[in-house]
Amino acid sequence: MIAILLALGAAVSYGLSDFVGGVFSKRASPWAVAFVGQVAGAVLMLGLSVVVAGDATGTDFGWAVLAGIGNGLGTVFLYRGLSSGRMGVVAPRLGRRGGAGTGRRRPARRRTAGRSRLARHRGRAAGDLAGRA
Image 1 (spheres, rainbow, N blue to C red):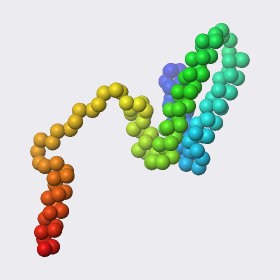
Image 2 (cartoon, rainbow, N blue to C red):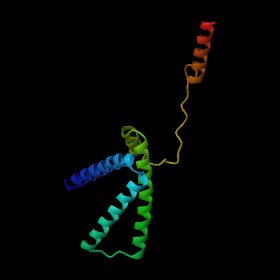
Image 3 (tube, rainbow, N blue to C red):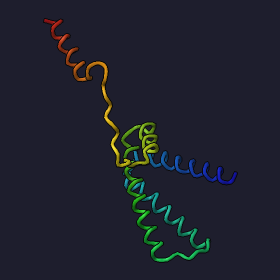
Image 4 (tube, helix red, strand yellow):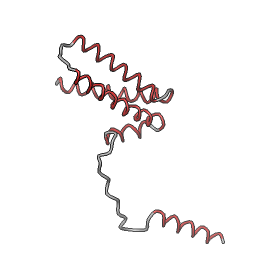
């Protein structure tokens, strides 16, 4: 039961932060919004590291900095997309794809029946012109 509650809390937190970040990035630069979010997260983690016991090494801090930079860049591009597009279109597509391609291209769709869209439009335009003459 605790795992379900933690997962639900994480999902609500991510959704809320994406929504609020998208709203704020319409008013300010996505870079500034992402920077403030990253700094707030770093301050929170540093505060927790004082309270929670552990033995982190320099390598651990290096990986944390690298992960923060990667997360910050991803957040900037997410907020940039949210600020320029509709949230109902950008967020679900990024959530479904994970924000990055899988390295595989989708197979091309085959048109087995009928003409291509361009050919249909050409035919329609030619018919319109012939009807006016």
